[in-house]
Image (tube, rainbow, N blue to C red):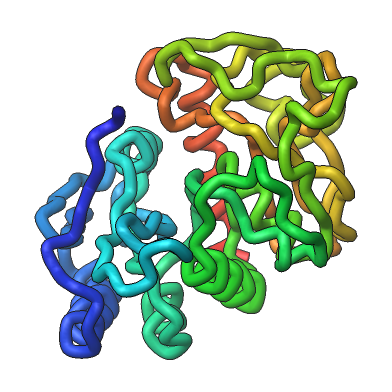
Length: 299
């Protein structure tokens, strides 16, 4: 299992206020730090070309461990896998993990200090969010995480921040915009590939075809090998999105926003963060996203 970045604080109002104050203070630090940033225990150098005014900051949604419908009284903890942290750093940006909460004011303050948002992978999304009864094959869901990430996504759209959804993150984007999901690919006879692989997370197991003219085609080419750790996928595509990659059995593997319809949105069904250290064109996905964020700040 990939090591995780786990905050040392609990989700209480005092800690959250301290976090928000710290993040917002970075706005001033960016102007005077000479190209260096810090977040918590991280201290990273500005690798962006030109240095100057400081690094692009990418908000990362966290998973919520220890809280579920079955265990609602558990205190839980927020975490984000180190693979996301290092993928953002290698792309030349500063990762900013965002704690799971429903405090709109705090989330707003954090996103106001950031230039883009990555919605990370994780548990299944509650089918009630796209108007369906839950099937037995649906795995552990977190209503709180669904609410938190939907709110993060809405706030990012309002600020016209670029958004990159990975695995669950792509599914969350689709659901938030009005689409739906296949609750279990094993229940659909036409989906014949093994999409929930048993191999390690750094192993690719199938190929996807990338749509001509799509943003990700710039770095991935016409096809790419991917890893696969999902048993759900997009069923009905939300308005404002278009499909940019599919597997040979027809599963939607990537989406992006239709130009001028929404903020710039990318989504992939696989886990590029687990491949970015060893696969240059997968690493280029994160570099591409950081460049999109940089361009958005200058628009």
